Image 1: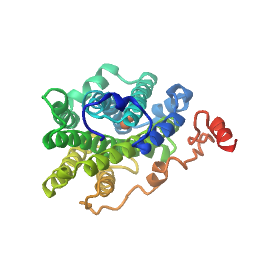
Image 2 (image 1 turned 135 degrees about the vertical axis):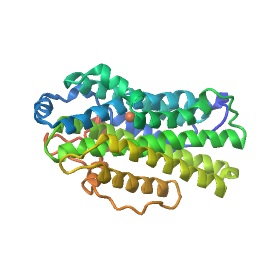
Image 3 (image 1 turned 90 degrees about the horizontal axis):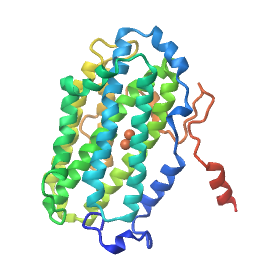
Length: 331
Ligand SMILES: [Fe+2]
Ligand SMILES: [Fe+2]
């Protein structure tokens, strides 16, 4: 069983019950990277030439992402990890938590490099209503896991676990983060902030695994607990996703009060709807928006395993020790 109180045999990795989680752990380890591998000097030159509206968008994104990475960790540490029995899942989540810390450090690196007012950036997520509402949404679901007495042996407890997972993993990591990544990478599309773009590509590659893990976990839990498979609960999950899209739509209007070259709130929000439809389908639900992808170039950026970064002439697909693992495979 995936969800429940851990018993001594749950510390054994063998025989493996959830090999998909071990596979994701191994892939995540191969994807290991460090923010300071990328120099941001050229981006700083770009910054000097950017308009106020462009700078506002960058500042706004960093203000959202920096705490959001640690909120995901809090959700894993207090709301997901303790309620799972599977050793393979624990292994993966331990690596994911390091990655979220690494993402936070990556955004911190951007924050330290650019001439941004740190105090202001750190206070924005509590001051801007559209940003605060996103955080409150996540905290509402997480609170049931962290502050209330939760018994995951009951269907109600399991439902709360899944609700938190949908809010944190599907909505925050799988929709809001993708919306932010698209905006960040759109600068690189216009030949600006190319090195920040590389950092974001690495973050995105990690996040695509986090999402894969979360979706597998949700499907696994629903399979093992068929009593949760009601029309009513499916509708509830769908509504959590729709509520998340609504919050993101308002946030993006504050991100782009006027729009910048080639990008405005409507464009980003159409992408958000397109991504949300994909997430609904991945959850086994019907799509809601029928939106087309306005940022077709992002499909290359999300297929990160194949992505070659032509600007830096550096393959972002590089893997730590990939040479060793190739040798192992060959031997
Ligand atoms: Fe992250
Ligand atoms: Fe993540």
